[in-house]
Amino acid sequence: MGGKFILRNNSSETPKYVTNSIRPIGSSVDSKEIEFFGKLNNKWWDPNGHLALLHIMNHIRVQFVRDGLANTGIIKDDTNLPLEGTKIVDIGCGGGIFSEPLARIGAEVTGIDNSLELIDVAKEHASLDSTLSGKLNYIQTTIEEFEKENIEKYDAVIASEVLEHVADSRLFLKSCSSIIKPGGSLFITTINKTLPSWLGAIIAAEYILKLVPIGTHDWDKFISPEEVQRFLEICGLKTKLIHGMIFNPIKYEWSWSSNTSINYALHAIKQ
Figure 1: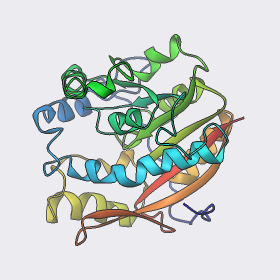
Figure 2: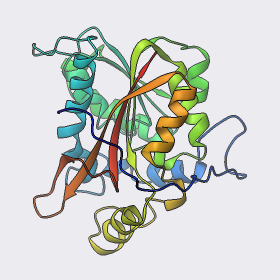
Figure 3: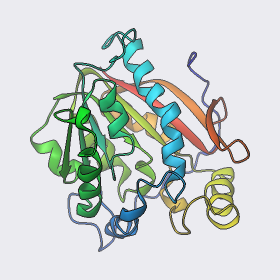
Figure 4: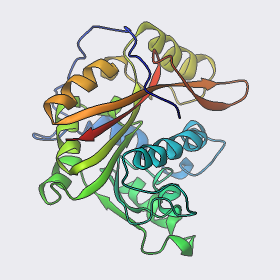
């Protein structure tokens, strides 16, 4: 995946951390987001449906996690099961689109989501593949509740396409950080807070190209890689690399880029 990309000066605006009546005290969950995605439960595993962009993103985000853990020495990426022996939490796992391929290459994966509908979808789909037996565990919970019993227990924590949907980014990242073992990794993919991200991720993706349902994203919740990096430093994590992610609607594929103005992936290591 190459070396570390230089951070771009995309946006210096401090993100708004939404607080309102729909967020339980001590939780980063936005109930409206849970309801929105829960309604997509019967479409979660349709590779050509509303979640198609997540399905095709697996090509690069599985590589992102595998290469990141290999580069930190946690795994040896030279076998058919490169993640064997690693304990990973997939936060906001939804119906398990990302959890399943990680389990298939050896990881012991715990997927958590606050939507009971989506956890049921994830369990049902995993049951269709006997090779996943014993490798996947799905729990309906929040990261803040899960954190209480799992301090520093995991080799890696993944928050892929989740950070832009939470009500309190700082609380969410703090809880993610606390369940990672020293030397373990945090992998994030999310959306930058820039004018191009508003045009690309909302106007183009939702209203023009119809790639995702209207209302999927809220620009106020987007967050810059610089802001994420600064807060992770406070939590004791050092950012190792940041990649831009570009979606090509003609080829219908994701690829890595030095341009972080819309989508980006961040890998940080707990000191």
